[in-house]
Image 1: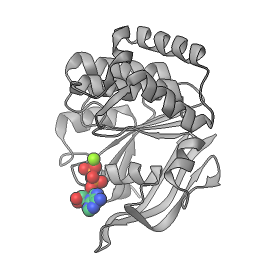
Image 2: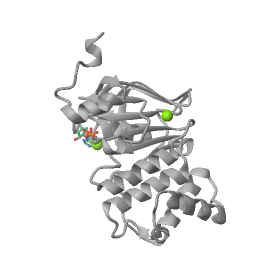
Image 3: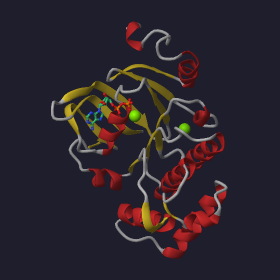
Length: 252
Ligand code: ADP
Ligand code: MG
Ligand code: MG
């Protein structure tokens, strides 16, 4: 059952229409976890931003289907309501808005109506407890004075409370200590089920431990050059992209 189907996607950016992605094909079925890896500057963030509908990225070829519907020209808010979620790499500080209020507003925006307060609070409490997050965290102002790990917790709680169909996680683990990475990884496990899908961009193995990875894709110079199983992630982390064994296209 296909959730996301990217066909021959080409993307350029900036006033000079700098070409970043060309001919990217990627299919993600419901219930799958995919990992996207690649050297810095190859277009990983560009790909997930384009899936989310970030207007800075110009689609020059191909199309994006979500549950069979062509969303190539849809706005970000439409995509969010359809069930696509992108973790933001550096969330902003929002003084005066608590974590709980932020999550409630986000859920209301997705569902088209505000959530029932009592039910929402109960669920948030349960999710926080499952991740070992102190209850006082929900009352703090979003990202104000937050450590890197505390910021990521807000993202993971968003994922758990919004229950999107597709979670795009762009280096959600970067710069975190071991315990924070564990919390993030646990959160992804708690979120993931047979009906939703995850695409994780990462450079490290820690976040992948405990996750049942279906596919690993290597993006280089704007193209997916190799796809494999979880062993491919281990290989890359150990040996780097330079020493990666044959590209998929070399087998063809
Ligand atoms: P990655 O996430 O793999 O490190 P990015 O997708 O962030 O790579 O960037 C790919 C390339 O596109 C880089 O050369 C980057 O400088 C460029 N790029 C990305 N976003 C923009 C933008 N909004 N404006 C101009 N150039 C951009
Ligand atoms: Mg699975
Ligand atoms: Mg990036």
